[in-house]
Image 1 (cartoon, helix red, strand yellow):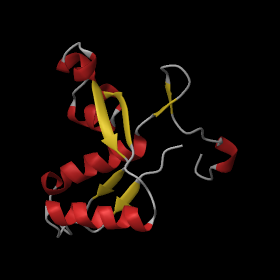
Image 2 (cartoon, rainbow, N blue to C red; image 1 turned 90 degrees about the vertical axis):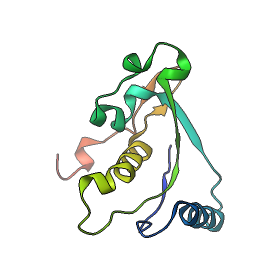
Image 3 (cartoon, helix red, strand yellow; image 1 turned 120 degrees about the vertical axis):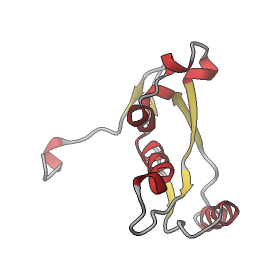
Length: 119
């Protein structure tokens, strides 16, 4: 299973302050730096921005993307979409990255429909 660690309310922090806060949080939780790699077209950011592996090239390096499973993000109150877009895409990518299963296939965390009140 994937766990994504989010350091929230980082909208007022500079990039180096975000990195330090994220490092401290991961150290307190004893969570190491985990990075997953999968096909670029499976990331929500590729869907939302209209990019795909085929548009980026045909080599494996160009169609793969790495995603850190720990992020420092923040959404400015009353900020425009452009102000929060990078953090939003990072949140979506780290949260919804597919888990690599047996072989080379990808799968998502299974959902039990009877356990979901809204379905």
